Image (cartoon, rainbow over all chains, first blue to last red; front, side, top):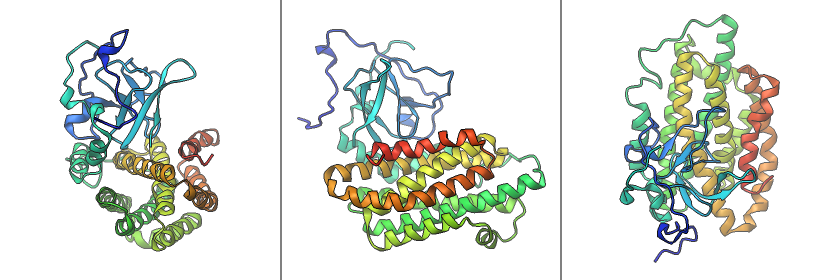
Length: 100
Length: 262
């Protein structure tokens, strides 16, 4: 049994099922090939985050998940080696906070 | 975006924290990462890429900026190699060994770029053009490493210096000639690991030993002035408009704020 306080929610126990996403390689080349689909570059002001994405506050790379993200989820930013937790931002969207 | 099946075994976010840390600090992770963006390059840029000739004043400013980048990279190379000896565990030692390789590469590609710009003896040119504030910072970083102060040295090197380089190189790459841009973009990809290592390592240390916060705060107070002065000098040389400079400085301030030093 893990003692990690940022355990992922069990999808089956959630009232509203999560949307699932098939991730494809977007050309992000800063991590080993098997992890590349979990990251993409932020394309600037015209870019938008999908329901399965958050921006890493440390290195500004977009982190992607195979499922819709919700507050309390744990995600990892491999390019900058950060462990993050998803929280609800003031504007109602999702953002990631570093969990040292 | 379409629905699909989930490959649980390959989901990076499903890793246990210990497994994640073991993975990202490994030499294997580093090797496969840099292979992705350095394979096929020669001295940090595609061999068939050639920049347009620079006007004399542009070249002069670029040489000064590159000389100071070399000072920063030399500081990081000496700092990271010294820190391997005092790193508290295997993961941090191995990570710092990869950082030493990165910093050595950065210095080499920047020196090579200076040679491409027609500087016959880059070392003496660096000595002549080096910023006083950056040299002071380099000296203090070396003292912190020599005093075996792990937290203070990591703060100075992987938080302050790396955050400044990450921001400046990204900004400079947007306006630089094609060759310099490719060289800087490759360095920025390495810097992501270095800034992340610094912030996360220090963040964990501060959580486990809150009493070190006061000492790090003193180091920050002492070094802020030199870093920000050097930051201003470089941004001026690369032609960043005054109105954009506070925005760039904010990246550094965000890091120290996350660590609780705002």
